[in-house]
Image 1 (cartoon, rainbow, N blue to C red):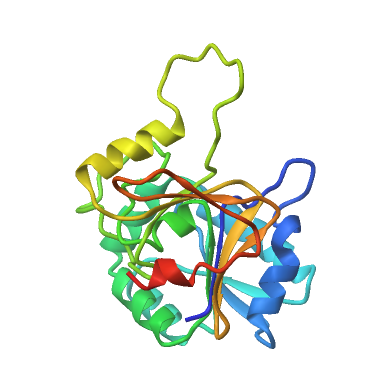
Image 2: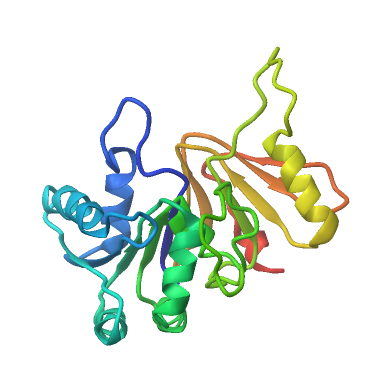
Length: 233
């Protein structure tokens, strides 16, 4: 598989996809047309136009994926796919209702580059149970693409020192997930990404990731480190 799973599409102080655009181009190689999945936002046309403009600036053409019978044909003929961020529940429900989960999974497993950010990487895992989003719609199930065998929590946040906030931290919420589910969770901080290609899986970006396992202390994994062990479960 060839994948680029990005925690956030916009880094503070930079433009849309600026912090990861070179990584995107490197993964695409000679591919100069990509299919964009805008289903996580309500304004799909506006979202697709934003992505199209960003990719045009680096010489890549982008098409918008549509629901309906033509959507499956678009996926089957795509050279690469980018799944945009937004609300994970809306994204998954739309993919389910349009019958696009299986075609996307099949193409990605066959080698089509799968790229995504935020909600677009939540659906790359086995389920969306570790998303940060509110369930604004109700998908038929939480089962997602299963392109990686572990759960992902994008935008992972560490508690601020000295904070007076009394709600659960992100770590506490993930620990609650592990009380009911025996599956590795990777907390991907902003500025980080997961890249999978012929060389294996590794953590990219500027910040470490936090890895949670049931019954074990969380592990910090440095940027640049291998993630191959997480695929060997």
